[in-house]
Length: 322
Image: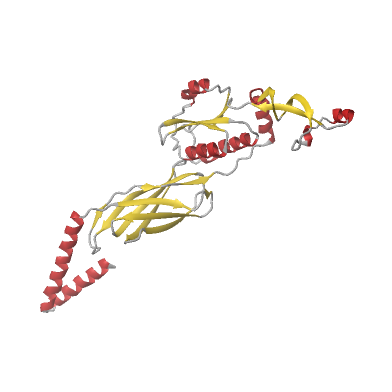
């Protein structure tokens, strides 16, 4: 609007000058002074800007999600192009944003929809800061803090996979000395206590002794299993949506069964090995956040680099997902 007014004022001055009106020179002179002043102010002014990305909650795939950008800093008018990047699949979306910072921070709401899971981060491709007249601009820099996770869909673990998992890992999961719930490894019999499952009742013995007795089962042995996610495999970027869903669903399945385990993968975004012990909701959340921002790279498989780490940690079974 400021630039439009300046252009109209300049055009009006030129018209008056052509019509040989003395006021035309005054109008053009005023426009020239404003332009020079604008250039000088923009050259010597320092623009300090900070930005934060926030969202009400975690996003879901194929659902509209509102992202709120809060801009604070030097008062003025700003124009920019934002890039929203999915750190897991590499998908990007560019959005033009215009905002004005006054005494209060500027807030910009953007609605996005993602067809894959991953951590969404934002960065400025271009950022222009205009002076108080709106006539000239200069490049500005600003890092956007904050991110939002798009959760993966739950991947189904069918009966054949479940049976194979139990058969393959049973010897590592269960102890024949401590109480637990491995129905293939009863380790003793005791009187019924409130809260015991009726599935564990030893009916024949109960009828014979006239009281209710239950079987005690083996306790899950933790820390012997690791889910390894290959983030350097030769698969299309969008396939990591499926891979992440499979890994996290398997981890949830094991956690629901009370089976502590590890999750391992290489995070190219952090340039480090991630090796998380998952035995609670908090540790699962940490592993999820790291995986969704791992920024995979094709052709850089890293499984062999984890061998020594697995050996030191007593890992006896590795489930590789790629």
